[in-house]
Picture 1 (spheres, rainbow, N blue to C red):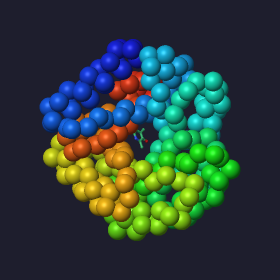
Picture 2 (tube, rainbow, N blue to C red):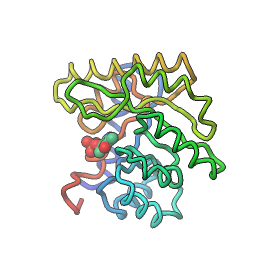
Picture 3 (tube, rainbow, N blue to C red):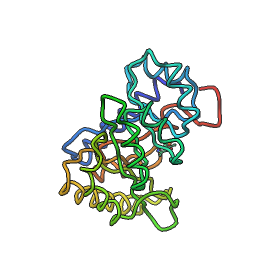
Picture 4 (spheres, rainbow, N blue to C red):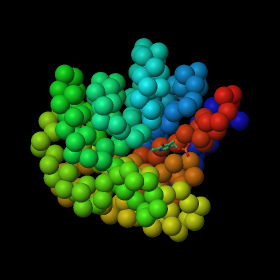
Length: 228
Ligand SMILES: *Cc1c(COP(=O)(O)O)cnc(C)c1O
């Protein structure tokens, strides 16, 4: 299958699930282009898609520079080393994987040079055996409360990467926990973005009220293969 039909299928799945679960809002589709070629990004762009995400700073910069003439909204979603924050502040419109006060502080200072605020999602740690990345619910809410310290950032919500599982009930439990924390966040500041759901757990994420799904494999094909 090539990108045009994959794109159509993913969009149809999103709409079908929005209808099935009677979700009263739209769901944004973020195309995760990490380890995918520039040619594939251009193909999707030419089909009208504008929101793309990368996970590795070096790879991302090369792609962003070579696609600089296109009106792409770039999201950073990978693990962040503090010595890379200046590049994230310089090249991206959004960063979804922020999980410490130190990173918020660095990004805020390094974004000052730009006329536009950097959109930020705080990454919530989910599930016991999940990665070490992400904030506890308590710390996430604590950092949200400090939003006034970050005048060059716009804290938009939370992002989560639950432990991969094919057990739909477990997917739903993890996502509904994320939604609950998101709702608590909304009592502190008017955040609008709940980023959860990938190729393998899209349906559970939409059923649980996600506002943004991050899809790589289902849009571009496997990252192990160079060709579509
Ligand atoms: C790679 C990645 C995705 C996309 O995963 P697929 O299974 O290919 O859809 C989504 N979110 C994050 C944070 C990722 O690193």
